[in-house]
Every structure is written in structure tokens, then in C-alpha cells.
Image (cartoon, rainbow, N blue to C red; front, side, top):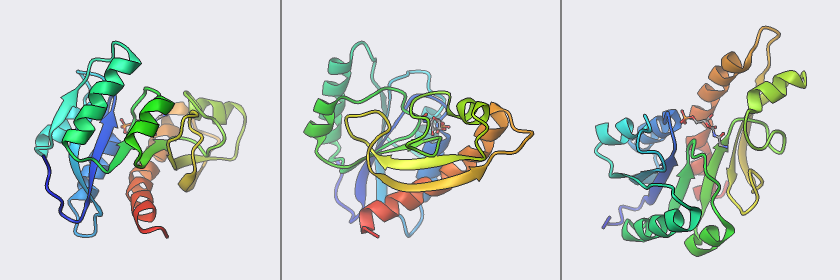
Length: 192
Ligand code: GAR
């Protein structure tokens, strides 16, 4: 059970690498942070990102994703137990159900590697390059029951270079993701 510290108790959900988790942990340790990360949950027991939670002594739990209902029921119990006020999806690659979102009844944020509403779903960087877009970018948005469709909190553009391939663009956008996720959290929690 986590005591209130004036900061919002936050759970970060991951599936893999965890570089956004790492940046959120870094932010959460700053004076100006409005969140305390009380829990990290992964649907993947081998997620590399779990090591960042371990290094910072943050409770972390992997839940086997056998089916959506069982996963979400277990997740809801954990969120209650840790008094979680805010969920940040950080490379969490499962879609949360409308029923879960209603039951949690508090904000859920997601970071997505495109300029939404363009390129919902997967393979965003290659799709932007193939369409010869001049810009791509990253978006932090509220999660609702439709994929990558909730209210946008913050978005930042990245120029697509002639020399770019999916990998190089991903790398530049990831750097931007690490900057805008903490800013979006501040924006959400202070309503500015
Ligand atoms: C990030 O680029 C994030 O925007 C993306 O997965 C990557 C996770 O990287 N999320 C999605 O595509 C969700 N639809 P990370 O594990 O290093 O943070």
C-alpha cells in the first residue's frame, strides 16, 4: 500500500524495451515531478524494461496475457492495491478494453510514435516514409476505447529526411518521445 505524497501514484505499463519507462523514472525523481511511479506492469516476462524498474527499486510485476479479461482483472486488483491514480502506457502493445477503462475511471495516457490521427496502430515510421510525408513525430494522448484515438495532450513534429529509413526515423522520434511524455503528464495534471 502506498501512502499519498502529494504526487499522483502512477503505474507504467510496458511490453518490451522500456526506454520511455526509463525516461519517466528519471522525471519522477526530479523535484518538479508530479508523479510517483509505484508500480510497473509488463505483459511480457522477458521485457528488457523491467530492469529499469528493478534498478530503481520500483515494484514490478509481469502478468501472463492468456486472455484479455483475466489480464485486466488482475491488473485492476493491482492498481487498487497500489492506489494508482494515473496509468502511463509506455510501449505497452496490448489494447485495453472499454470495460477496463470504465472500471479504472482515472486517466490513462499513451505515447504513440506518429502525428495522430495519422498512422494509428503499428509500423508508423515506414508508413510515414512510404507516403512521402515531410514530417512525422510523436503524440501523447488519453486512452479511450478506440485505438490511438483519445484526446491529444501533446504532440511534437520531427522532420523526415531524404536519407531516413524506418530505423533512423524511429531513433530520432524516440528522443522526442522521452522529452514530451513528462511534459504531457505535467500538462494533464495541471490543466494548462
Ligand atoms: C515507442 O516508440 C512507443 O511510442 C511505441 O512503442 C515504442 C516503445 O519503446 N508505442 C506504440 O507503438 C504503442 N502503440 P520503449 O519500450 O523503448 O519505450
